[in-house]
Amino acid sequence: MKKLMGVLVLLAGCVSATQAGEFKLGFVDTERIMRESEQAVRAEKKIEKEFLIRDAEIKKIAKQAAQLQESLEKDSSKISDSNKRIKERELASLNLQLQTQQREFREDLNLRKNEELAQILAKADKAIKAIAESEQYDVILQEAVYRNPQIDITDRVLKYLANDAEDSPK
Image (cartoon, rainbow, N blue to C red; front, top):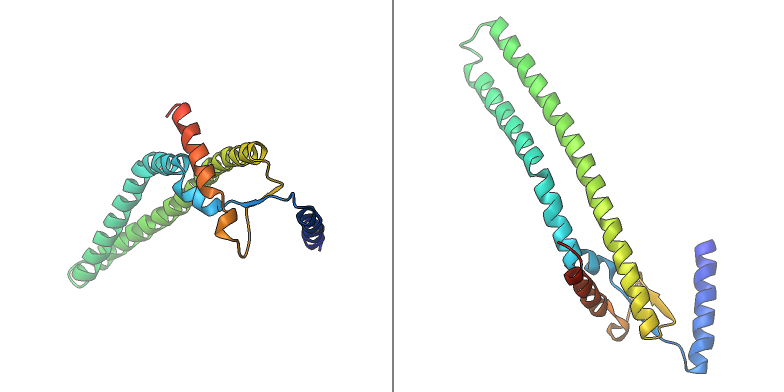
């Protein structure tokens, strides 16, 4: 309800400013910023590199488990019951280890992505504010059901971020 009231107040202000002929509105596609900005691309590569070793370890365990499963299925009639139980316990242990590592991997990966995204969003907000001030925008929206392409300033924000990326260390 508070959000709706805020939107209504904003719209009322927009209408009165528009009637005065002074209102300037812009829109930024945040998802596009998170996909296309140089900072987002670099962050994705950085995270991928960070998690490469862990991903390889998980794939190795998955391969071991698959091989053990295949061996059990193929040789179950040829091995003794005690050896079969040992292999089944080993398989269960590998599967548990695999599930644990996969869960931890996903959690850590999501945490790192969120950290990087927060930094990118902070830079994007800085860019949006700089553009709003320099070009005298009254309101810049980041979410809208519909927006006219004429008010979309995403390209300008991406350009600003690209210039910022050139100035910052890589």
